[in-house]
Every structure is written in C-alpha cells, then in structure tokens.
Length: 207
Image 1 (cartoon, rainbow, N blue to C red):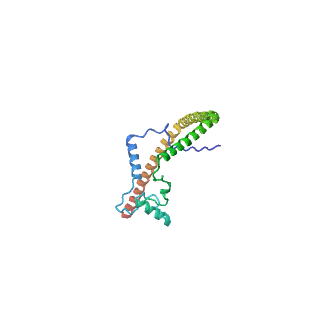
Image 2: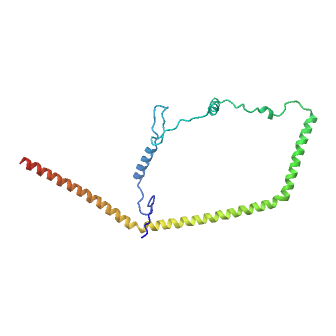
Image 3: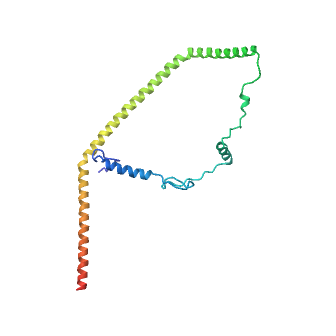
C-alpha cells in the first residue's frame, strides 16, 4: 500500500469563498500583527517584538572617520584633481589650430580603422549574433510553451484530485461536527449526573 501525503495551501474547488466579513476580520488580524508598536522613547528599538534585538554596529576607526566625514558633508580631498585639469596658459592662434587639427586627424584615423574592421569582420559577426539570438529566442519560447502546458496539466490534476475527494471531505467534516456535538452532549450529561450524585450525597448526609 502506497501512502501518498498531499499538502494543499487551499482547497479552492472544495472550500466556499470567504465572505466580506471574514475577509475583513482576517485583514484586521494581519494588520494588527504587522503593526509596529509605538514607543515614546526614540532610543528604544521600534521593531516588532517578535524580531531579535538589533546588534549594535562595530566599525573600524577608518570607517568611523569616513562616516563622520560623510555626516558633516565634507568633500573628499584624497585625490588631487588639479593634475587632470586642462592647462590655463594662454595659447596662440597657431597652437590652437594645430591642436584642433591633431584632434581631427586622430578622430578620422580611428574612424577609418573602425570602418575598415567593420567592413571586413562586422557583417559575418552581425549575422552570427542574430542567428544565436534567434536560437535563444526559440529555445525560450519552447520552454515557455512547455511550462504553460505543465501548468495547465497541474491545474486540471489539482481540480480533479480535489473534486474526487470532495464528498469524502464533506462527509468527514459532517462526521467531525456530529462527533463534537455528541462529545459536548456527553460532557453535559456527565456533568448533570455528577451534580445529581453530589446532590444525592448531600441529601443523604443531611437526612
């Protein structure tokens, strides 16, 4: 005999839909549980009481100094940026023209090299990249379709499994309620008998 244990978070095909009052009551319990207790003392931890206390931080001296610098909004002066700034010395028109010509020559040289490389190797690389991208896309689309089919199959199996045991679950629920009712009736009858016995004992003693 194979014993299969199935645990469901919910039984949507068996359990009735909760009413608005039930939803409101459940949401109120959730809001109460998530509510952070207010404390008049700001030094106290305002976190939820179920959470462990926060461990105080322990920073090294270097980190502490850096945090103090950030807190005081002091700029960082560890790197001298003046060496990377352009020279402010005056230049003649001829020097400016030479600088512009050198910049243009460098740009055109690099541009020509890039175009030649693109003409030589770029076309095949682009086609190969497109082919690889299309292969990845087809693989992802196939995986998506398979996942959708698995989800649909799982939903159908779940509905069939719940509907197959719906009658049994309802019968067990009714039997449980009847058993609880009989237990309460038995306890009430036993309590009545106990009181009758005590009353009879008291009357016998008094008589």
